Image (cartoon, rainbow, N blue to C red; front, top):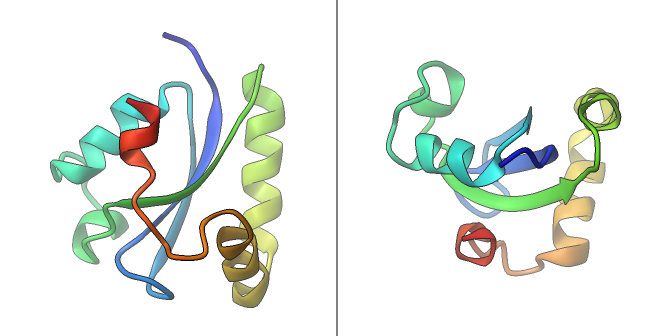
Length: 95
């Protein structure tokens, strides 16, 4: 299933954030939750999907990811809390 998305993962509310882009959000978050992705997210136990934006095409998703990565931390937290104020894991909503 091809469905581009930008996502933000966190290890806890107001904790360490990870921003990424994928063509299959459900599969990618499952990989994080099962520690199949080496690197930053595995090192800091970042497994909670707290924000995502779906896109019709990959290029706009990549552009949005780059934009979000340039934002300061306060803006990122405000973005998350605007749609997910309790920092709930959104993974069940994409299954």
